[in-house]
Length: 159
Image (spheres, rainbow, N blue to C red):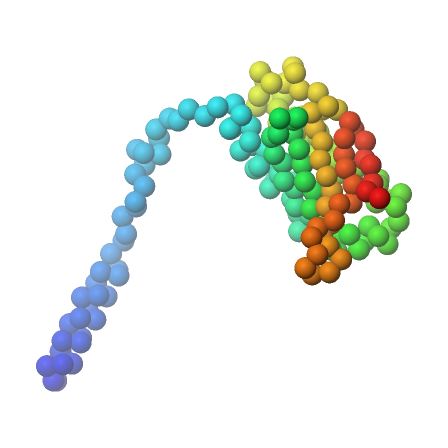
């Protein structure tokens, strides 16, 4: 063998032996056990964000956020869902979207009751839960369009 081949094989063996070694974790287990103080507001924001992800499906995405007026949702329907709702008619569309709003309201109420007992007595779902239903724009580059709003436990379609 030539000197060059020997060097190349030596280099490959050296690199290969390092690749076989298990990597050590960058995050120490002890660091993960440290406690951290989080405010009620920050914790509620995180839990609402997680709940929104949990309630989302391929046909729609739900974003829940905490605003000064209360809990606000954005329901973003897919183009397929919007097409189905258009074919179903206005009455059925209103019924379906109101059904989703009531389901989200119930989930948010349950979350606050179970995990935020200090907030629960002052939470009024009728006043503190509102949001909007959005659909993709007509054309690819068009901004999203609003299908309607949920406020004071009522769905109001957009004009």
